[in-house]
Amino acid sequence: MKIVLTADPELPVPPVHYGGIERVVDLLARGLVARGHEVVLFADRNSRSAGRLVPWPGADSRSRVDTVRNAAVLAGEVLRGRFDLVHSFSRVAYLAPLLPLSIPKLMTYQRPVAPRTIRFGTALSRGTLGFTAVSEAMIRPVRSLGRWSVVPNGVPLSTYDFVPRVPDDAPLVFLGRVEAIKGPHLAIEIARRAGRRLVIAGNVPDAHRAWAQAHVFPHVDGAAVAYVGPVDDAQKSALLGSAAAFLMPILWDEPFGIVMAEALACGTPVLGLRRGSVPEVVDDGVTGFVRDGVDGLVGAVARLAEIDRAACRLAAETRYSETVVVDAYEAVYRAAVRHG
Image (cartoon, rainbow, N blue to C red; front, side):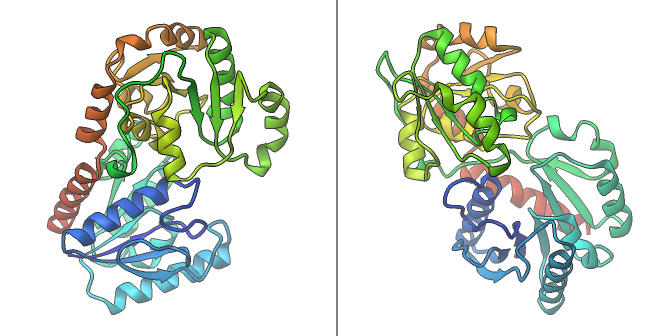
């Protein structure tokens, strides 16, 4: 097939540090090219993924001017080429000029879904726009409004080393943006109450720096709580692989959270609050523990010896590998082309 993939213009594909969606786009592009598909990727000009790169002219998804410029470039490329399908991981606004056309289009959501957008896209495309989401949890309110498939995020397994055993005093790890909804302050509380060391990794968004300075960094002493900053893929594998568990004490309904799959690929159990996709990703008592509050997660730390790290890696291999993800998207593509 001849396929267009689009990613947001702010980050390269793949990203250097933070950028979960861009990691999935990279995984998919490489997988599709390896299977003989022709891929044209619209992304940040510093991208280095598989396929032919077309840099977005506009670098800000929130800018109306950049949105118009990017939509025009995408439409021009699609109209000149004979593509089988356009698959967007970016903004549905970029698809606007293409919506009335007969070419099959697919919009993947890794963010909260706006019902109005689904209604608009379905009506204007006259059924040629399908939707995928990365978890069942995120589409429950909108499933009846469009043609949906669920394809979870995945990870390149070769990037993450499986660690079958860790020392008894291995730390807990928090890896993600250091802001309130991600729960780093709760990770600190869980580790303190459980009597375990904690390593925090991730970027501090400028908008949340004051909060982090007030609620996270006063607890960082380099011993009980360490902060190592953003990490690249090699550092991430080493960090997650060395952990007794990965903490996911989120305070919002996160659509997926690729870092959970990355932890499982290292054999590391996930301890998470029952929000968003956490109950879909974590098999309670098998690949980690899912609890309703901090008290439950503190208690779960004491039960980590019950988790077989090989079962965690197996879950990553069978549910979140690049092969599984590319297989799933290929199936969605075939259905979209038939439907179109």
